[in-house]
Length: 539
Ligand code: NAD
Image 1: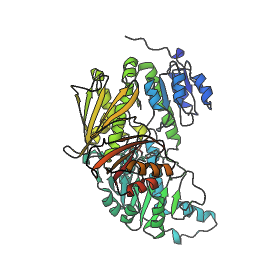
Image 2: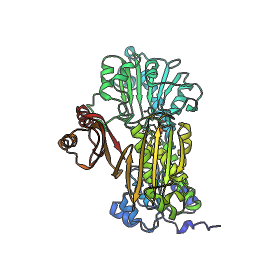
Image 3: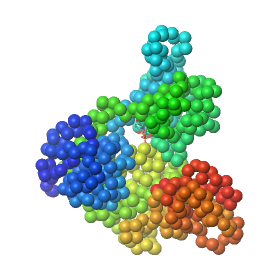
Image 4: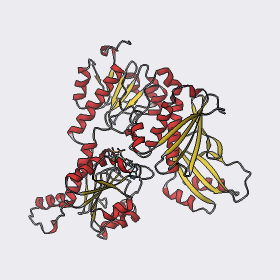
């Protein structure tokens, strides 16, 4: 049996302000955590030498430089969900586990959505303001009862499900839309899953609980808002950007919407003259969703418990980057894990809807390892495109995939082209339906996509990739280059279908870009005569 590490010889640095209860948890497990908040990157690069664990919230950035400076770092724990402040790729490459605490604030956020719903129904913020102004008039404050009304929940993840459950408690009829779930998997009895358009037509209150992704950006657009029941009310406590705010303003102006409440806006903080902020029929709160004493305590206890369990017993709960495995194996597999995750991300974006079937073919030396890790990395990549990124980890990915009806078959490639390892994945939204294929390999530790559908290429999978289907005629590259150049976007690399088809045939292009084109530039490209399809994939 391996000897447990001595907690007194183990250095844990707490880099951001954390509820003091986290320190008590560490001490109860025998550790003596150092509190060093507010360090600069230079200071942290020095402090990390000899440290086993770092604890952060969102202020401290754990960059590649910090990982490279470390000599015995094993784990970075984030109290909270988002891990944008931690370079997870660098962590995986260097065998450091990054963990978060994804469940700590779901209840608190769901309760805020319900509070906003009640406030909208009974004009509570406005009523309070009227009383403060010295008036006691209720003529303009006639509210609406919730009992028997229909609540439409968009996004039935962790928060959406709690909101649905509380809606049932309020005796509302609850309906929901979540294209990634299958019928019986809403796991709340009494909730009808239905298409978005149907939900919009029948709901009196609509509460949004989706992540911000390409598919959900402006999910409630002008067209969708036009479907809503007259007099409906909208609540957004998810992410700014999932509703078209201008369209909401129009709908309020025209009386189609009776009110709206936002805990999140596309641009935060908004100015005090923001057209939504100044309206009487709109409630805006300053991204308060996760701000409760209980949520702060829960994430602090969770992070300290998880780090202690990992350091003492090797149990990696909520690891967002790497599955538990021997460090030497992880070192060899790490670039392939990243590669497969990116293949998954690519396919999820390219397919643009719920993937239900995927076939992974693994060839070369890498196939002698336990391929379940590679399968897991694929699931993580796919699921992170439709769930809040930090919520998906190597532990919960299989359960989430099962809930979403995603089936993955793994087989071995008999005659691989790339001896070290190659991974080919074909995926589709349904068995026998249209599919896409992508294949990748690793040169040294550099990742490459070497085939996308029928096109053989050599594409580093990072940043923004502009994908086109265009007529094979002279001038395509020049025209794209000019449009992107005018928008100040540099093209790093271009890969095209090899020439040989008939002029006028459709062909594919893949352009690695330094920056992402905005909607206006994309619309200009899409409007070109020669262009059949254009899509930006982010990797
Ligand atoms: P989650 O990942 O558990 O659930 C998201 C759900 O949305 C999933 O079930 C997914 O299938 C579904 N979904 C994805 N794309 C969809 C689409 N196009 N249409 C409909 N459903 C879709 O996430 P969660 O923890 O429940 O968080 C929900 C949202 O709340 C996220 O945007 C998160 O960032 C946000 N959030 C806000 C606050 C706040 O302070 N206001 C706090 C925590 C979380």
